[in-house]
Structures are given as C-alpha cells and as structure tokens.
Amino acid sequence: MRSALVTLLVLLPSCGAERLAVDFPDALARARARDTLAVVHFRLPGRPLSDAMDEALAPAALSALAPELVHVRVDASREPALFVRLCGGSARGGGLATCVVDPGGDVLACTRGYADAAALRALCDGAAELRAALARSGPAGTPLHALALAERFAALGRRDIAAARLAALFASADPPLRARAAARLARLGIEAGDVAGARDWLAHAGADDPHACLTRAMVQLAAREPHLARAELEALAARPDAERPAVLLHLGHAWHESGHDARALAAYAEVRARHAAAPEALLAARAAEHVLRGDHGHDHAPPTDRPIPP
Image (cartoon, rainbow, N blue to C red; front, side, top):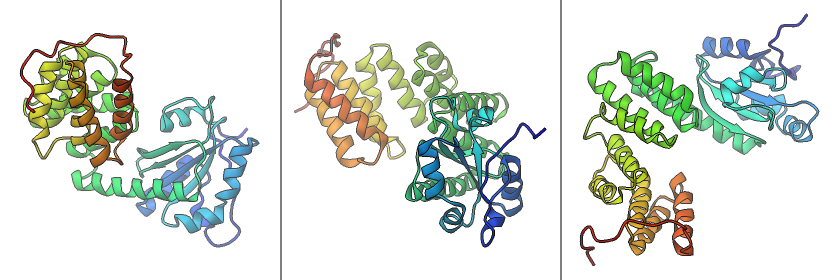
C-alpha cells in the first residue's frame, strides 16, 4: 500500500528534474540541503482549472521561472491535513493553492486559487524578501525571530498559529519581548471581536508601544468610546513608528463615530491618496461609501467632546 502522503508530480526527463520533489517531506529535505525555499503546488487532478494551471506551470516552466527553489505538486484531496496546515482552510471549497515554505516548514507566503507565472514569481519573490527580513530579525529559534514569524502568520490570517506562538513567547521571553507579544495578542483579540480579552492583554503591553497604542484605540472604538480613541490616534499619527495607514483608517472611524463625518471622509481620502497599495486603502473606500450613504442604521456619540479646529 502506498504511503498516506501521496503527491502527484510530473518529472522532467532533462534539465530541471532535480528540482522537482517527490513529496512534501522530500521537498523540505531538499530545501534544507540547499538552504532555500520550497514551493508547494496544491492541485485537484481532473478539475479543469487545476489541469489548466498544471499546463501553464509545467515542470519546465517551474524550473525556468524559479530555478532557485524546490517545487512539489500535492493532490489536495489526498492530503487534506497538509492543506489545512499550510493554507489554513478546508480543501473542499477548492483545493487549488500555492504555498512557499522555509526549510523548517513554516509558511512564508500563500495564495488560494489559480496562480499564473507572474503571480507565482511575485509570490516567490515576496517569500524570499520575507525570509531575508526574518533573518535580519535574529537567528532562527531566537525570540525576535519567533516574534517576527508569529507576526507573519497573523498577516496570513493564521491567527490560531500566531496566537499559540505569541503565547509561548509571552511565557518565556524577557520583559520587553513579553510586552511586545502581549501587544500583538491584544490585536489578535480585538480582530476576533474579543474586547475583554484584548483589554487583558493590553494590561501586559508596553504603554508606549505603537502597536499597543493602535490596538488600544481599536478596543475603545469597539467599546463605543470614539472620543478616547480619537485622542489616542491623533497622538499616534504624529509618531514616525506608527502603522500610518491603519492609524488613519481608524482615525476616520473615530471621527465618524463621534459625529464628524467631514473629518472622517478626509482621513479616508488620505489613506487612499498616500497609501494606495496598502490593504487599508480598500477598507477606507468602503468606509467612505458607508459614510456618504448616510443610512448606517446606528447612532453615534454626540460631537460635543471638544471644539473642532477649522
């Protein structure tokens, strides 16, 4: 009987064949031996879109497109646990995905659905840049590297993995790193709608940490305290180390929730004008549309907390 780990791979008879792994463990072993990244191409054989992707990214094309990396094709229907581990969701809704992992098996980049050659190259380049940034944060296994990797999992939407790694870091790191881990755990909490949990973690975070300051404002907004959030965000906006697109986005929310829609629209417009490539730009556009419609169906705090400068 074949091993439970079944992969489908088209082998090249000539140049580039050595870069195609037999299965995921083999891909990791080759990546470790060469100190490079592995690209996992999840597919669903027999599905038109999957077959079209196989044709567009044939082994020869993969070897030419990213010759420095190890490639492996995996049947998502036969490896559902691996798909969930790397992609963070069931393959039932569509098992087509591409993940780039480091030699230790940690996901650095992932995209679901069809990926053409340009998308694959961009994904690999982004993963390589991230790996270099992680290396600058400290050697693998150090607390700073662990923190950077946890933040990457959070950015990929893998909050479960990020939270587990941050909690472990909080339990074992020195006080400054404990505070940074707590600030990031608070952010995960508020993003999941857990206001009370976020407040608990903020109690352990550094009061001046810009990540914690923004999270505190997000908690205040969720608790219907827009005036407090606005004061926090206005102070944060003047700091060079702040997450400026997110600060401006939430400042717009705070202005809107405190009844100053003109100020809210100005903040959203600044996000879109100065940070067009940031994810917050799309959120700002949607928020501006919400404000302009005027049919929110909810009340806002009265705009009487303090005068608004001209």
